[in-house]
Image 1 (cartoon, rainbow, N blue to C red):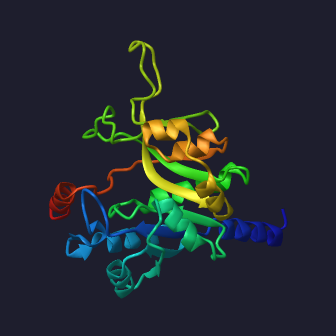
Image 2: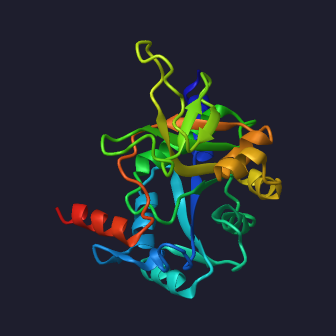
Length: 259
């Protein structure tokens, strides 16, 4: 291959892998009101999330999507971008879609606003998974082996089963796959990491889809994508940390940070 053509193709591939991370953040939380502004090592959780997302090599910009002026001010004071959204969004995906509507980026990464220790490498893996899956796949996400301290039977830790082509077969709060015969080698359970990468044009389609029976049964929004016949590419990495859902979990993370 001529060097000039090879350089052009390499540059085009790099350009295609550029993505914008959009972090939804709201003040209201039943278990932890004001969670984005809770301090970890003296810095708001949401600022930690921004800093981690910005370290990913495929992320060209980080934006916090919020309806709260306090969150907006903290993010911009820390040197990151934020955008105020409507207050009536039913979930983070809808909030992200509002912000992404006017972007010129092709790939939007939904980074959860309560993941102050999200590994940048996982973001890159998910972006690459979407890129490698082909234009017909609109979404990618991440799976990880369970850490020794995690119980795969915990319904709060979502599991995912993956097909041979790297696409999601199913997500569940139940332990999947079920090991029927412990003497036969099988597939170990994988936990789902709540990180999503979307093709921008799919976001308005997604939020327009009607909720589905399996989604409502498991209370897992990603099942709506599968039930409506769309594919989700899954990258497998190692997630050592998980989100902060309660003040108690934040205190544990603070203790680990101070060690």
